[in-house]
Structures are given as C-alpha cells and as structure tokens.
Amino acid sequence: MTEIKLLERISINPEICHGQPCIRGLRYPVTFMLELLSSGMTHAEILEDYEDLEEADILAVLLFAARLSQVKSVTRLAS
Image (cartoon, rainbow, N blue to C red; front, side, top):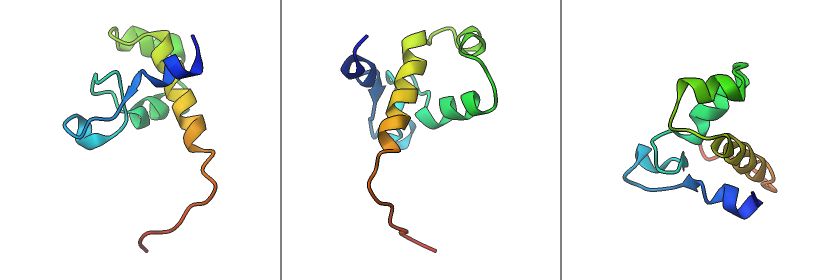
C-alpha cells in the first residue's frame, strides 16, 4: 500500500473526537493508538482487541506520526 493510501486512512472531522486525527472515522484517535504501541502492545494484540481495525490502520498511524515529527520548528503557545 502506498504512503498516500495509508495516510488516507487518517481522517480529521470536527464532529468526531473533537477534530483529533482518527483512524477511518472510527473514533480511534491516532494518539490512542500511539499510546497502545508505546505501552508495548504488538500489532497482533491491538488487532485482537479492536476487531474493526486492520494492519494498514496501524501502519497509517505510524506514518502519520512520522510525518508530524518532521515539523521544522515548534513554538510554545502557552506556559
């Protein structure tokens, strides 16, 4: 699957999860999936627990996070 196709799996809708990036509009925020992965859950464990997800969804989350990490600068908005 191409990067473009993977990134199309991430949706942003102001009416779903307060506009947070989610997987295919399923109300699984990208941040939630990243937390599961960083806690040590494997792809297989996540897919077993969340049966409406697919392997490509997890890859899309990782690609989306990688793209966000390529931001050139970060500005503090509030203290």
